[in-house]
Length: 251
Length: 258
Image 1 (cartoon, each protein chain N blue to C red):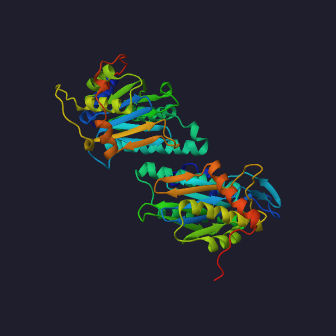
Image 2 (image 1 turned 180 degrees about the vertical axis):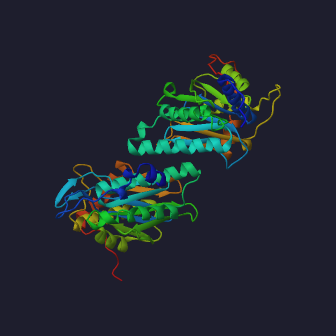
Image 3 (image 1 turned 90 degrees about the horizontal axis):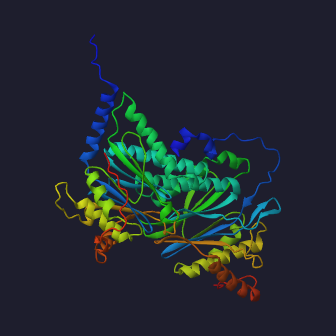
């Protein structure tokens, strides 16, 4: 019987983190921005069937990058958690904070258990409040930590660069069209500084809109509607952002 | 639902032991629900009374609920159980929609409700029946459809109009005489309120419009634009128009004899 090589715990954890980070960095990014009426989610995703952004509950939505089967698993777990909570107690008792905690526990446990490979995913859980100051955005990296974000956040490959770009240009009180255009600009920038053009067909866009009369505030923007928002008006958001916000990058 | 069954079975209505019953139970019951379809949609309406034996338990109970964006369910029977069943039904439709990414078909929703009613059969045998009426917009066939149920979960699709609950006999009579294929949305809403008026006229457990307290029937409309509940003002307008006419003709509009 052979004796396994000694690997220091630090080294083991660093290896696992490295593995997860590489997996996440391979995929396209997702950005989440606050605008005056809510939160907008923009992902570069040519697939109509496999979503990167989805509804969790009345005011809560979920965005993810990384391995599809892994984050889909987490998404369904989240929907179950939220629906069970809401049915047992009240719809108002389901919060993004609670959900983010559950995700953090799950991801943390998987990350540090020796038996399993770490999940190659990074999640965003956002909740829209009564006003912009009540909005909550949580970023959940692969290792089970929680980062409370404000204004704008990006995850996925190239996230550092995109976050910086967004952080400099995003400001409070943007309209949906402005926020959407900024998000698309940020996603269209290549690592080497070049620009690509992203069309409406390549984008998956959804909003949590606090002005929606229905109880469920989540809405996907598709086809014509999305096209109109992308074309609408002059690019007022190209002006210098007066209030650069914190937009820390993903690992 | 399956998840709930394995994870928290005590939350499901069918999984509770039945208490032994002695004599008639005095528990609030809901009464009359009516529905009628029109080209472009379907209306579902209910009176506001809950009775407990010969006592009026509640004057302003709500018995018509949106099931999801394109369907609604109205309930007659044991109020507490019915409300819980609706809550679970709503949860299930929403859960399916979120997990699968697409909503259930109208048939699927109707079948699901059927199973839920059947799971309540034990209670129903002890006098705690729940008998809903389900109506919705079928996006595949582009029309409004109505489904009625019996206590065993037997499901049948109704053509044109339907009624359930203690006042349903009288409501159905009224619907039968007044219904036409080519109703407009406004006419359809008036029709269901007429039917409820007639039900309240002859059934003591069905509440008529209460003009003094401003308690009017709940009227909901489902079209391709989704579920919409008429506001109190809109209901009041319909009720007042009918009431005005009935002051002259207490039995309501008369159908042709031949």
